[in-house]
Length: 287
Picture 1 (tube, rainbow, N blue to C red):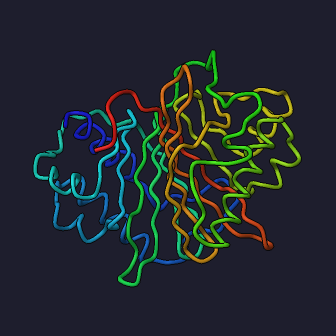
Picture 2 (cartoon, rainbow, N blue to C red):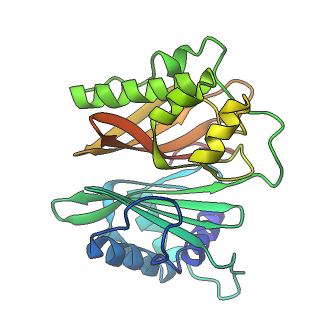
């Protein structure tokens, strides 16, 4: 409960400037309803307003704190009454906020210092709903080791712990496997083809955000920089037209498990990854 309380306060501070312009190349959010929903989400959190939050979160909503603990929609709403804003909570500074519109999916990324927050919004018949809220706390110093799949990379390069239910899902998973293969083999050109220009990654095992130019440079130098393919043991894929959200759990030998949220977009007939947030599970399991 204490961890959730601290992280709820953190998101309020990180989300104070959701209308800032994104510096990375991408179209700005084109639906004012998403802007309104995101502001209302932050207000509901800061006021511990469970009824208001209930109107904004999806039935499949998950809250992933910086320690990797997962809170379901039911648990977040049930605990809202105990979440009281601490007026003395130190502000992490002015956040750097980026918004990206992908048709029926929109993302909000708020960065302040070593704290990175991702909110994924999806368009349902009743309106925009928050599907994922995820925190990643970067390392204070460059990583000494990078958790990774085995050298033969069966999972996730050749197969993953998720069975596609449709041809669209199969195409997305195939694209994901191709992405991970290119990363494992340090094939920068192929990895480039599997990612969008606005690609961004945040990982508990890295000391910084990795945008596309930075990630390409690391791959060319055969340096994983804290971000590497890891075995996907379970997951759930949500498809919304030409955009998709993959929530997955990864287990790595000799390292903490990871909770990962990825966003894929279909462009020019192929699926590319645009977001990857990876949070290490520090202890305990999903609620």
